[in-house]
Length: 239
Image (cartoon, rainbow, N blue to C red; front, side, top):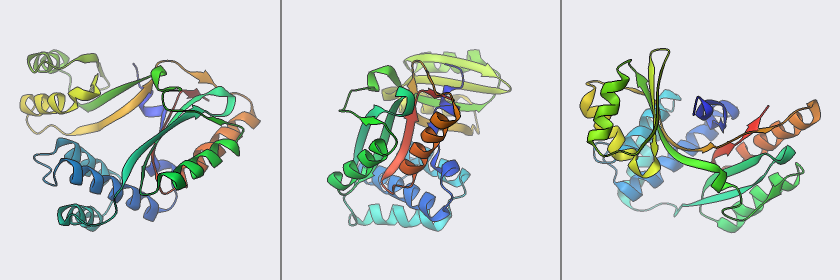
């Protein structure tokens, strides 16, 4: 799989200039995750990984705590996940993940990003079959065999494992995320994950060439990232 997860996902931390918007997106995602799976990070590995990721992106502790307290209180907004798919500039395939309290508004906003950049939004399943929904865990180490043994012992469906530049990258089926993370934590004392996510990884790539097309693609991504409801953007574009 190589490092597709590094350059095929548009990170909100890198593409948004406004720190407040980054904080808001993390706060919303932490709130939803805690409300769905429990607000104790020790018992909710997805939440734990999300909080660690937020800290790496320099999200203040008070923002994280506020989201957890809101989830614990049971009140607040009723956000729900929404996913949109379609074809971006030059026909590249795009998946947009959102958290929204108003699906009609969010769909309209996302559709506008597609139409204003000569792109085409589709129905669910339009392009997702051309992506693998994978859990990705990357940590420092070089004992790839020990990692694989631990994952096999835990009955994890490992789709790929790599050792490169002092890091081990593990790719598993998304449903095995919890088992994989726990197995690695039990095997490697004090493990810290450089990457701890579930992503859509493209099975191929679509070239986007020419200054005009690249400019349109960048505009498309920027417009999506400007939307408060958008959490993640995945694509197969190769610039």
